[in-house]
Length: 113
Image (cartoon, rainbow, N blue to C red; front, side, top):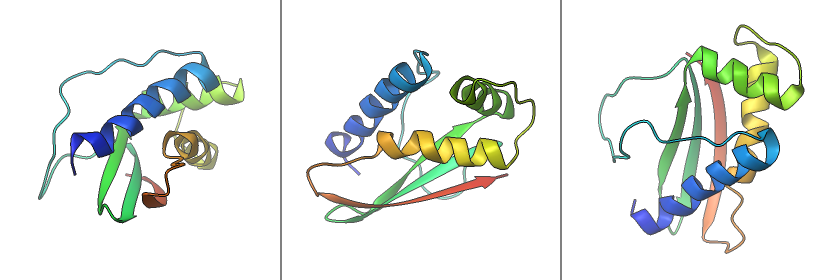
């Protein structure tokens, strides 16, 4: 996957956090394309791309970050990953991957690890 495919998703992620949560996320490390086996986070959103571009983008976060994110979203304190957190992360991911160009067909999966 090329940077011109993924950069709009990154920009949309930052915009979504700013707009929906009033939080400005920051990058902790560099972005990279990974293949094979890699470590997983406690809460991961997997965005699958099909159509002209095929691949996946993973949005991973610790339990603490996932719970704080959804606590902000729902305006209630959540301390552990539960159905509300998984559903909430899915709701937050949707605007991140909305594509008006029609270049992508997107599938979303949320799982607790």
